[in-house]
Image (cartoon, rainbow, N blue to C red; front, side, top):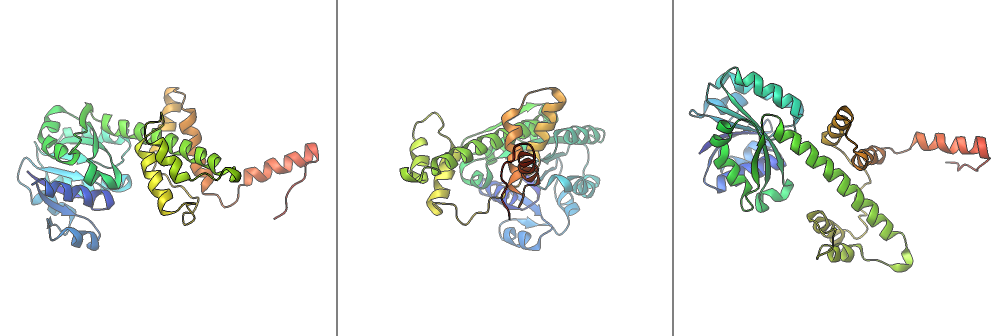
Length: 298
């Protein structure tokens, strides 16, 4: 089938190419001329986002893979060219409540909307993406050939519930990922501590990935990272977040759900970005005041 695809970043370009390999036609757009040029030999490329919808025949499917902060701007450019029976897909990391609002607004125009939480990262093109879908069955049925192609060879896609369910599931998925990665980071730091035992961290990662209770794809990736850089010497201890962990923690507070490990993992990311911890200074100063403990000078 023919699909409009907006957003050709690392994930978006790989997904568009996977659709092309599966025999689908892609009309693509990205604000980056370089990104458009990278796909121009394989797919038709539009110069403006509105041209994507205009270049499709009904029922149209337009798939967005753009940052959450620009989804609304893209919708304003695309929606006027759509009509009843068309479907918009947001495959990025939008907040589920915004997806629910957008689905309701578009339904008033007769336009379907699917929120698709997309997992798989850089490896999804080869291994298949995991697609968590929220929306109406009719819209899902129209888009299913694309979902099936993107999920190959594992076939990991499903309609999880009404609008918002896909992005809610992705939010929880990424929050779990925060906790898992933080546990691995702390565990391997503890392994690295006893210099007299001289652990090969890559060897431990490989060993644990071969049948242990903690085996996982993350351990396989960590093994590759240690193989490339045994002490991760070229990587700064600075960890970003794209918002889902924050949303999950705020959602947990709102719903009175304990989320201790994930909340601490999120806080650890914040701490990684501080060149100097003022809170640690406060604690050191207080220990000196009440107990006469020595403080270190810069």
